[in-house]
Amino acid sequence: MIWLALDGVGHPDDAPPGSVWETDLPTLRPLVDSGRVLDAALGVPGLPQSGTGQSCWLTGRDAVRVMGEHFGPVPGPTLQALLREHALPGRLARAGGRAALLNVYLPEYLAGAGEGGRRRNRLGCFPYAFQVAGLPIGSGGAALRASLGLGYATPWDALETEQDLSRQGHAIAAAAREYDLLVADLWLSDLLGHQGRDPVPPDALRAGRAYLRRVDALLRGLLDSGARLVISSDHGNLENLRVKTHTLARVPFAGAGVDLGEARDIVQGGRQIARWLGLGSS
Ligand SMILES: [Zn+2]
Image (tube, rainbow, N blue to C red; front, side, top):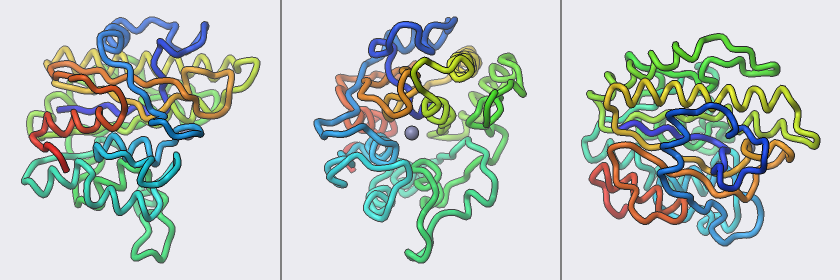
């Protein structure tokens, strides 16, 4: 199973006209359109955030209720405890499963998990959950940059081609045969979404569309190789570049070779992913 966890990408049904979704996405768009449209607000006021949103996906528990608010971007002590006990990578590892995070990080970044409360954690939910589970991060034959070959700052110039991404998709699908779960934490979309303003900045719109086309190319490589996969998102942001903040947009839950079930929100989405891996209620 391969999990592409998009950060800050609202569903096209909730995107305004002229959004990043309006570009040629021959693989991604049909998959998203055939998937489910999930609520990420969970009945709690305020804008959804990555700390709680990703914790919902990773644990299948309502992390927003646990926190009492939408919280993020990185998990503080309360969410860290939730992730240590209930996050999918750790549960899978304890059950004897094999999982890895595909992201490549600088060693300095991975050293940013607070130890014993002496330092404040700086890791996002995905690297945090894999690190505390003692699982590999960015190693092996299939590693991936969250920028998907774009630069990490304006003007986000392409450093790799879309064909490179398709080839990486093939390589990741081949590597996935040795694993129960491979995850990609694709956060550049949220960074791009935070460039939003009125009028919409053309460079951010161009980069946002380029990013989705790269997800499309990666997906094409994965599906050509017969991979079983799922795509999720933690909250809206990039789909509305008229605003700088996250949005209340619903989010995609799509997949190939999996039964998406009746999930209506990101907590139920997280539970469904756990079920595929033979891990029912946590
Ligand atoms: Zn954000």
